[in-house]
Structures are given as C-alpha cells and as structure tokens.
Amino acid sequence: MFEKGNWSRRGFLQRSLGALTVGAGLPLWYAREVLAAEQEAATEQPKKVAQNDKIVMGAIGIGSPQSRGRAIMNDARRQKGVEYVAVCDVDKRHVERAAKDVGPDCKKYKDFRELLDNKDINAVTIATPDHWHVLIAIDALRKGKDVYCEKPLTLTIAEGKALLKVAQQTGRIFQVGSQQRSDARFRLACELVRNGRIGKVKKVETRIGANPKGGPFKVTPVPEGLDWDFWQGQTAKTDYIPERCHYEFRWWYEYSGGKMTDWGAHHNDIAQWGLGMDGSGPVAVEATGDKPASDGKSYNCHYNFVVNYTYGNGTQLVCTSKGENGIRFEGEDGKWIFVSRGKINASDKSLLEEKLPDNATRLYVSNNHMGNFINCVRDRKKTICPAEVGHRSVSVCHIGVIALRLGKKLKWDPTKETFDDPEANKMLSREMRAPWKLDV
Image (tube, rainbow, N blue to C red; front, side):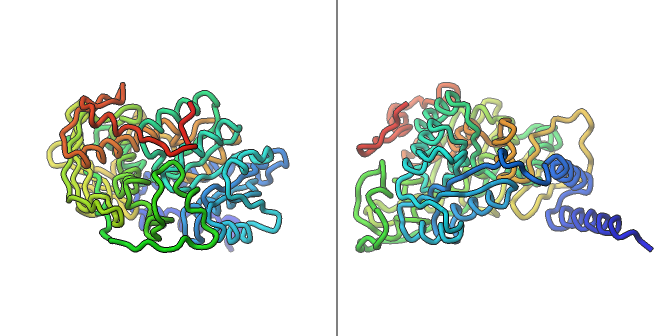
C-alpha cells in the first residue's frame, strides 16, 4: 500500500511537470528547474508570517472589477502576510465596490496624496492611466512607500529620468508590472538567446497588434461620482467623452502610446532582456504607419505601424502591428525562437530540448511577479523589474512613437537619452497642466 503523504507528493510533482511541459510548452529539463525553484521558494517562506512582518498596503487606481487595478490588488492580497487597508480612485463607483470587497474597515480616498499620507501603509499598487504613474510613484517613494506600478511605467522619457532620480534617492523597493519576466517561457527564450543557442542575433520581431479605430465620439455629461478634472490631471483640459476614460484611454496619445506602450512595453521589454540591453537601447529608429485621426474626438493612435530599430551591434528590432502576438528572435543559419504567453517553439526542437551547460549565463528567477515584489519588500533585495529596467524598456516604445508621429528616421543616443533632431527632442517631455509638475 502506498503511504498517503508520499503518493500525494508524487502526484503533485507529476501534475506540475505535466502542466509545465504540456500546458506551458517547456522542455522537461527546464520544467524541472522551474518546479525546483518554486519548491525552494515555498520552503523558504515561513508558514506563518509574524505580526511585525505584515505588509500593509493601499491601492491607487482601482478601476472596475475586471481592471488591472483590481487584478493586481487581488494578486497582492493572495500573498502571505499582506493586508490592504485603503483604496483610491477618482471614480467613486470604483472606490465603493473595491472597499466593499476589501472589508468594512477599508479606508476610501479620491486623492492619492491623502492615501500616501497614511503612515500605516508600507507599500502601494498603482494602476491608474499611464499619465498618472510617475507623479503618484514619486510622491509614494518620497513618503516612504514601496511601489508596484503597472506598465508602461511612464508617459514620457523625461518622466522616467525624474522617477529614477527619486528612486535612487529614496532607496525604496520598486516593481514594474512587466509580468512576462516572471513567466518561465520568456525567461527560457532569453536565456537561450543570451547563450548563443541561435548564434548571433540578427533580428527580433515584437508583434503587438493594431490599434483600434473609433470615432468621432460624442461629448456627454460627466457621470456622477467621476472627478473628470482630476482624472485628466497634468494633461490638457477637454470635454468628457466616455471613450477617452477608463480602459479606452490607451488609444489616445494624450494619455498613453497606444499598442506601442500597451503591448510594446511587454514585448520590447523581453527583446531588451534577450539582447542583454536592460541598461541601454537602440541607436536609431524609423517608423511608418497609417495616419491617425486628428479631430480631437476619435482615437488618435496609428492603426497599423512598423517601427524599425537598430542597435549598436547591428541587431535589428522590428515592432509591428502585424503577425501572431509574441516575440521572435532570429539568428544565424535560419535558426529562430518564438515565445508568447501561450507557447514557446523554435526552428528545431533541439534548440529548446538541449539543456544549457553548467557555466551558462542564467537570468533572474521569478515565477510569481507579485510574489517577487512582496519578498523584496521583506528582504530589501532588488526586484526582477525595478524602475531602471522599466524606464529603459518603455523608452524603446516612446522613441518608436515619436518616430511614428514625426515620420522621420532618427538617431538616438541611449547614454544621453537624446535624439539628433531638435523637433524630436521636444517630444521627450510634455508640458503639464497646473498645478501638476515634475518637482525633482
């Protein structure tokens, strides 16, 4: 007769390996590594978190029940020893729903500054529209909070530089929500590329989908409970159009960068990781795309686009609205590796199935993005995607958007973070509507 405990453990291991090899598409050798890392992490974590290890958190930009704000808050609440005590949103409906889910003692705020003044709070999750990320994150860091901020990290490159300065000054823990870095498929693809499995990388394609078309939309009364002026914040004041607000803000250059920063911040981040360029970037960029609407009442991000980047070593990065969503690394002799959230495959299965040697370059291991943040809040180690990495990854997207909007071929200095073109350099920052400013 099988001893019950051992049988259960054996069954768990087999099911886990099956999920990683069949479900996630990982080769067996890598699936075993992932499982071993997860078991080690589970063993290291205390079964019961001491009272003084409790992490008290607040959520800024909570959104609807289906939003990223709600998703990352719920993800954090599932981690051991995490307690949410406050939620904040400029839409009263969102605040009321979220607070009800958190519990009767949950504090409710409209102004993020008031939540951040709460000295009981150790850390925050930020999932506002993109144009608010940096102003809120800087205030949070200065008030002693650790920060988990959704991607894309910034609206402009100037914002990113300002945020990095404050992050370095304060020494707080920072995690950018580029969760693909905590997915074993993407880590495997990058490790194989970094170790020369496809030879010298000639080209990387990041396929991120087309922007939606829509409009002209009608101006309507602002819904009760929504502070539209506060929602707009630093951006130019305009009439309320429902399709400008909440999830749809992504398709307006005033608040975001369209798919270039929505999906591009994910896939270009992995391209940078695979190329070993986390602290740098390309040296040239040019782009073409469909001319967007300019009536002020329609989505204004380029619908179809192709953005071509060149790195200093000659590698080409092509970010495009076409093709199957994912990242394709192309090397020598027709070798390639393709990875997405659903699969990883290669021009030859042996490229994946052959185990990396013991002396291979290995990358930061995280199999739980929010868990990685919470662990780092406790041990004060650097996260898998700190502010400097998030800034560099979205900078690739930002310079692509600038090239797309100007229709020019531009040279980019990744060290100075400037173009060779005065008109393009003006787009590295944006004027902020008073009273908001980057006070760094």
